[in-house]
Image (cartoon, rainbow, N blue to C red; front, side, top):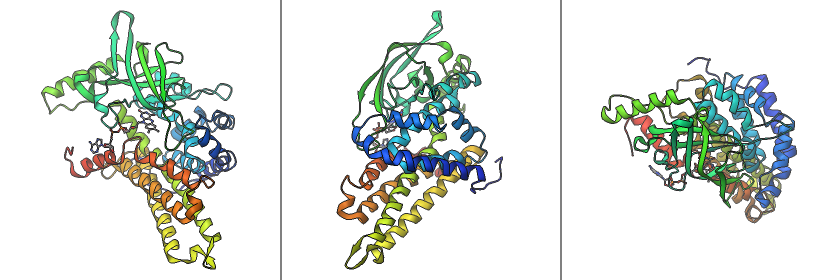
Amino acid sequence: MSGEYSLELNEDQIQIQKWVHDFAESVIRPAAEEWDEKEEFPWPIVQEAANIGLYGMDFMAQAMLADQSGLTMTVAIEEMFWGDAGIGLSIFGSGLAAAGIAGNGTPEQIFEWVPQCYGTPEKVQLGAFCVSEPDAGSDVSSLRTRAVYDEAKDEWVLNGTKAWITNGGIADVHVVVAAVEPELKGRGQASFVVPPGTPGLSMGQKYKKHGIKASHTSEVVLDDVRVPGSCLLGGKEKLDEKLAKAREALINPKVTSGKQPAMATFEATRPAVASMAVGVARAAYEYALDYAQERYAFGKPIIMNQSIAFMLADMATQIDAARLMTYRAAWLARNGGGYKNAEGSMSKLMAGRTAVWVTERAIQILGGYGYTREYPVERWHRDSKIFDIFEGTEQIQQLVIGRAISGLRIE
Ligand SMILES: Cc1cc2nc3c(=O)[nH]c(=O)nc-3n(C[C@H](O)[C@H](O)[C@H](O)COP(=O)(O)OP(=O)(O)OC[C@H]3O[C@@H](n4cnc5c(N)ncnc54)[C@H](O)[C@@H]3O)c2cc1C
């Protein structure tokens, strides 16, 4: 491990936390209900975030590169999602594409493409990270989208359909994970940047969702999409080496093959997703705590009943545990090391479950009002379920943790 282990926020981080919180409280919260009902991408809010420098390359660089603790982004995301998860994901969704490029690209590719995932305040752009397919979600190794190299033109030709893609089809930069040698499963895949306006890429169906409705989720159809050789992330030489190793590993199990590109991205982004869940859970807990002190039944505030106070005590404890695990995972992701190397998965598993449970308890505390759309807790509950599903379902996190603690190839 490089830095000294500490989960204490420094002055800069506390300032960023306050800055994002102010934006979440004054801009995001008041807009949340409207965009949830509309089920449309909240362009005006993303534009406002870009205007103040919260959506954009500079903020990402400041929060990620200049931060040795790994905590700045975690703290910022929690505040943003405390405001609203659908809008929060609309602001942070491009980060997944940026992480896909940063995790697999050469320095030149990172320099060229990451800024284009955000654009500028004058021309806001979006990124989309396209892995999942109708028949391959958890099972990332069996992607059907194919990438074929046209040597004569030094171009790659992509064909396939991607499913449930955040910002899919409305993004400027699409990062697509495709099979180059399908028989090598995950080890035969590579990531490609599809530049803005490339012919052949189109939006398929836009999904109608249970929660995070402001975030745009669509199919992405790739029909003979041609990209230059330079759009292969990491470059051809590295891919050829990786494929050769993977072929050898098929015959000789002692040879270790390279990492899966999509999995490398997910490893890095899991603590970020966990902090999204913590933000939603905290919003519901705070709301329920206030409500329980104001709502009278049988002549006293309902919090004066142990059953309500204990529920809130458990909610507070659970959120604290999830946040601490998330901070630890974020610190380890930045500084290396780790006890069992599954801390990212542990944090996401814990935070996802916490968000679902806490938001459901918040509805309980608000009673009949909690069940109506007049109060935000029902929306937070709908929003929370996504954290058990995307970036690796609950069961996939358990699988990763199970393998890490046992050292066995649990299926
Ligand atoms: C709103 C939203 C946004 C998304 N954004 C993106 C995005 O931007 N980019 C992207 O690439 N994808 C995205 N996804 C896709 C998401 O990552 C997948 O839906 C998720 O990985 C699960 O895949 P699946 O839906 O195919 O479920 P399946 O893999 O079919 O799983 C179905 C059930 O079986 C369980 N299961 C599967 N395999 C196992 C196993 N080996 N052991 C035990 N249980 C198992 C799962 O846990 C789950 O409960 C998004 C999804 C949603 C809903």
